Image 1 (cartoon, rainbow, N blue to C red):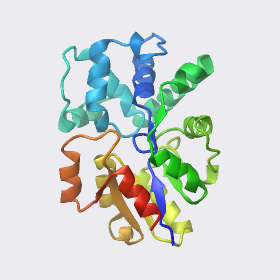
Image 2: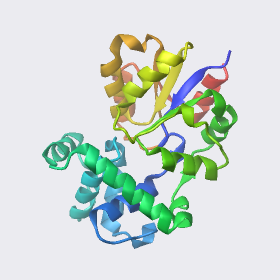
Image 3: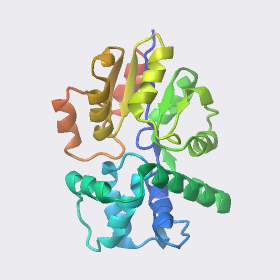
Length: 247
């Protein structure tokens, strides 16, 4: 019997870091860039260096401000970033709504430029497309953007298998819903060790039905694999995941 699985989207199936860089810059300035060439060099380098720290979409606004205000390229410590988030006066739900609306305006203004900022990870994307009717996506990305991208890259993904970020629900909560409807044991694959640690803490005993796996590609920091080992979460390559799905 083939394995059932739940996939994160950004950083696992889709490389969207360039789009996030442009959209987040639009959020914190009055400018409307459509490409990386229009972004300040130090801003882009800081964002690419530290992308692994960000989880919910609304946190990109706080992150982008730091990237723009920090004129020398630097590594942002997780504790410092959490401190920035804690001092942010605008609630996460409001920031998330603004980020998604900014993204929507970008798509409306120049869909081709927006799409060009994405690229699926291969070979995992091709395998996901082949098995899509049996798999799930759980993501902090908004559903409209996910479906726009899956369609553009050749997949008409079933909407009832997409659990997205509009409602501000935690990934652990989405996984609980899936576990309630899916009798078979599941794997959840995410590139964010922060997400996996949170799910591990929030679900606890309920993880008997779902196994966590850390994607070794995507937006990862060199220390993430060590943390995954400490949490007893397997670190899997794309080849590993494909083999797992076809066991």
